[in-house]
Structure formats: structure tokens, C-alpha cells
Image (cartoon, rainbow, N blue to C red; front, side):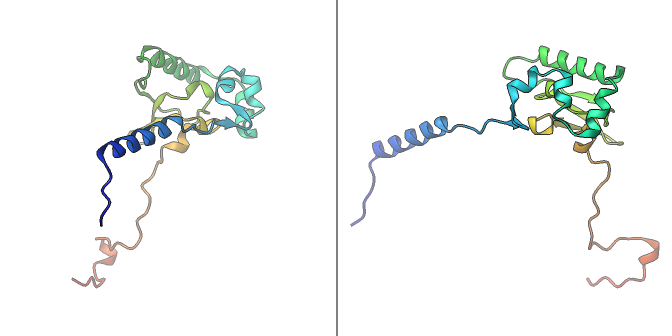
Length: 158
């Protein structure tokens, strides 16, 4: 004898699964023990205590005109975006800009020397440089025979 579940029972199971998905709570993001909403309220001096020494030194020397202009354009793009939607991408050559909590959620086109790589800023990126997320070279692919003058005599089985 085979047991065939009733249609109603299948629908109930699907509803339970959907309910469980809604109930599932996500782990709150913390950066060095501070939650995201508190990070956004920090002043630059308080943020400096949380990031690495190199970034701290750079921030202590003050934000120059170009990084400030980028932050201003990011603010503008966030303001123009509809609620619940991603803001438009902002292109920049400032690979040495340190990511601050205010940038989270923005989309930045980071120049890698050839094109702009679109990167969405996430909380895990705080304290890192923009350049870390736009690779400037094409990684080597070993093991493929190349066509070059030095290796024309190499035997390539067909």
C-alpha cells in the first residue's frame, strides 16, 4: 500500500515553511562590538578608535576635498533613491578612500585602470580601502599553452 498525502496537508506544510522563513532572524552585524545603527551615529574621532592604525593615521590628517566631494555625491544619490531601492552608482577614481559607515548601502563604481567596477558597500567593508574591491589585473591562468614567438616550437597534441 502507498500513502498519498492529501492536497490540504501539502498546502499546510508550505504555509508552515513560509512562516518559518519569516520567523528566521538574521544575526545582527557588529563591527568590533558595535552594532550598525550605532556605527552610523559615531563621530569621526570615535570611528578612528575602531579602525586600523594606517586608516586612523590617514583620518587624523583630515578628509581632503576630493573624498568629501565623493561622500557628498553619495549622500545626494541616497537622497534621490526611492525608499527600499538601491541608489544610482557613483563613479570614482579614489581607490585610496577609506570606507566609512555613512557609505554603507551605496553603489560605487571604482576605477581599476580600465573600467569602473560597480561595488555595493556592505557593513563588513568598514575601515578598508575602495581599491581592495576592484582588482587592477587579470589573474594568471596557468596551464594553457599560449601562442607566442618563444614557444612556437612547443609540441601541442591535437
